[in-house]
Each structure stands twice: as C-alpha cells, then as structure tokens.
Length: 466
Ligand code: TXE
Image 1 (cartoon, helix red, strand yellow):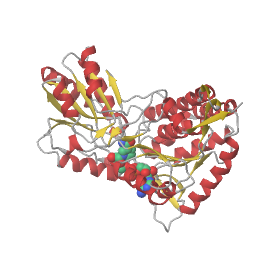
Image 2 (cartoon, rainbow, N blue to C red):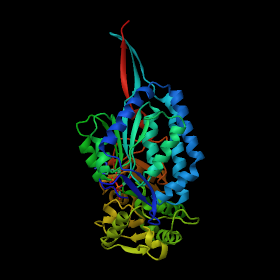
Image 3 (spheres, helix red, strand yellow):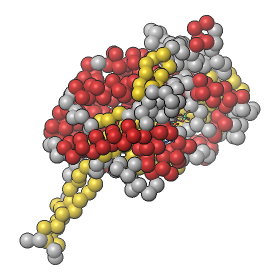
C-alpha cells in the first residue's frame, strides 16, 4: 500500500504473492467533507423512509452479497490474505448481520407511553441521529463493515465509512451491491484513503453524530483526541489479548481444537483471537502434546489454493512485529514453528509458521502485548483462581474463554474475568444478536444486538397537554 500525498491512488498488495491486488482512490480531506455533505442530504430523505422499506433494502443487500459470495470471498482473500473458506465465512457473516438488523428494525425501536402527569400525557420515541462515521481495520474488513453500517442504516441514518488502505476493495464492491439493492445514493458512502487524512477528517468533523472505530489502541487515542469537542458519540473497539483457560476437568480434545482454531484463524489477526492460553498443571503435558500435534498439521500457503489452512500475515510490518515479539520473548521455549517461511513462492508473501511457546515468563511481550499473528503462548497454572488472576494482568479486556465441565468453574470465571464477552467451551464466534465490545484498554460501547441499534438513535420525549 502506498498513500503518498502526491499520488492519486492506493495500490493494494496481495499478501500471499506481493502482486498488485487492485487500486482505489486516495481521497483527501475535501473528498471526505464532500462525502459527509452527500451523506447528510441522503440522511434527510432516508430518515423519513418507513422501516419496512429500509428493511427490504437491507434484506436485498444481504441477498446480493450471498449471491456474489464466491467473487467477494476471492477478492477478500486476494487483498487480505485469509484462506478462501474463512473469507466466504466472513462474507456470509456480513449478510447475516444485514438480515438481523433488517428483521428487527421495524419492531425494536420502541418508546414508552408514560403515566399521565400534572402536565399531560407523555411518550418517548427513538429517532435516527444523522450522518454517522466508521473507521475500520484490515483484519476483518467485511464483517466489521457490517457491524458498523447495518445498525446505523437500519435505524434511518446515513454513514461514511473509511476502510483500511490495506483492504478497500471488498468495501467498494459491497457498496456497489447495496446500490444495486436500492440503497439511495449517499446512505452508504465509502471514502478510501489514509487514516492520517481521511480518518482524521472524519474524527474532526462537527457534522458527524457518531463515530465507530476499530483498530489499535494508539490510533484509537488519536481518534478520541481529534473527536474531542465535536460532540459526537464514540464506539471504540481497540483490540484484545484474550485468555483461554483450560481446567483439569475439560474435554481435552475439544479444547485443543478450540485453541487451534481460536488462535490460528485468520493467521492470528483477529481482535478476539486466543492470545494467551492457561492450562491446569494436571493436564498440561497431555494438552500440550496434543496441541503441538494438531498445530503441526496446519498447512500454510496462499489462501486462494485448496487444502491450505492458514494464509499469510496481511503485511510486512505485521510479520516484523511477530519476529520482534518472539526475539524478545525471554525464557519461553518454542515447541512448534517459530520461523518465517521464505523458500520458493513463500518468499514473495508474508508467511510465518504457526507457533507455540511454552511457559514464557510473566514479563514476556507474548503475555503483555497484543500479538497480532500466529503465536500462542501456553502457561501452566495450579488453579482456576491463579489462572484468572494471571489472565487479568493485562490492560485489555475484550473476550475470554474457560473450558470445563463444571458449572461452578464456568460461573467463577465469568464472574471474575475482565472481559466484555465470555465464552464457555468455545471462543471467537460472535452472532449478530449478541452485544460485542470490550472493557479496560479494549475500548467502550457495544456493537451488534439491540445495543448497537439504540446507539444509532436518540430518545425524544413528547409531552402533550390536553
Ligand atoms: O491499525 P490502525 P493497523 C492492531 C494490531 C495491528 C495494529 C496496527 O495490533 O498490528 O493494530 O494495525 C485508520 N486518525 N489492530 O495499522 O493503525 C486506519 O487507516 C484516524 C487491532 O491497521 O489502528 C485504519 O482504517 N484514523 C485491531 C484504522 O484506523 C486513522 C484490528 C485502523 O488502523 C489514523 C486492527 C488517524 N490518525 C489492528 N491512523 C483489533 N484487535 O481488532 C490510522 N487510522
């Protein structure tokens, strides 16, 4: 990706081959302002459209996305690197989110009829808030686009979305399908460009009522700073360092399968990926041996090819970050992987072996930073309580999972872990109907579910004197 101010376009690189995957416009601050103005004009009309009609267009968008899922998935694999089945899964996830909001928008945005007061009768109603903004990253560009755009549009707002300059192509293709589905011009505006220019212009705009951001903690802080004083409401999804805790009574095979998919899905570049694993002493040897065996079965390669289970990292910088974290790991022992793949066709891409590191010390970056790649640190612990105490020693609080057959363990974990979402005997999957978001450094606000729909509305109280 190049986004030099003197250039007119962004060049997107295929992370598996180093070849050009496509190009997109390099928009500037004036383009962003024009998109916001266009979105405002669209909002004035869209907010007056009945919820039935809005739902029909969202359903139609989902239908077209499903109909074109093969091409969209190929485009996603080409620009992002994830394997084709994961890309298809993500495209289907987009459609599911649109269908969910289409199905609830007509009935979920209700108000209250209040008891008669001294001043008359009162009721509350929910209204759209105006032009919304979204800044999204490159790791799950299709699903995160749905999380931010579907509830905003369903509630009667328009939205200006800035995709990552590393993955703008699927966002543009999906916006074209939305238009084909009947979405009026300006309701879903895509502005491609750099974060420093387009992202900053969105954050600084006083004409945007809400800005939802997903990305790194450092960029999130910048966005907060730029948004300060503009009066917009914010949703911040700033990543995580999710713990997985395996108790002595867990189904070991199921937990191993969960750890492999939870860490190596999307080459480890998922905000809710398992980034630290804590396993009970009693089963640590058996669990680790099985985990190593399953990890070593993962075939790495170009995700467009059949039979590949893990693609490349999205960027060279991401690859360098993984290598640096492993070099600085301290006392941990690498028992699987640990190397970049460079031979033959691998050399042109950003490939890294799925890696397991046993018992890094508590100060290791592997346990304290968000490691955005296929590296899983495994630490053995003497009790659930010490696992929870260890797991909570991080600034993040996004997701967490416990693997056990005991209701007491499940409850103890759910009660005491710092996380916005807790799974028991699974990890990673988030259906559209459940609220999703983090605590502590992982951010605030909720996406998905009714919470997101409500975020994109304001409550108005009406008092009628007889
Ligand atoms: O994220 P950025 P990047 C983490 C992960 C990853 C690192 C960097 O650790 O390695 O972040 O990824 C836009 N004002 N996560 O570089 O920079 C940018 O163009 C406004 C975790 O992609 O945070 C992009 O659209 N916007 C996370 C978006 O912000 C700005 C997922 C995110 O970019 C901006 C992704 C600015 N000054 C990365 N600068 C997760 N865990 O979900 C950039 N942007």
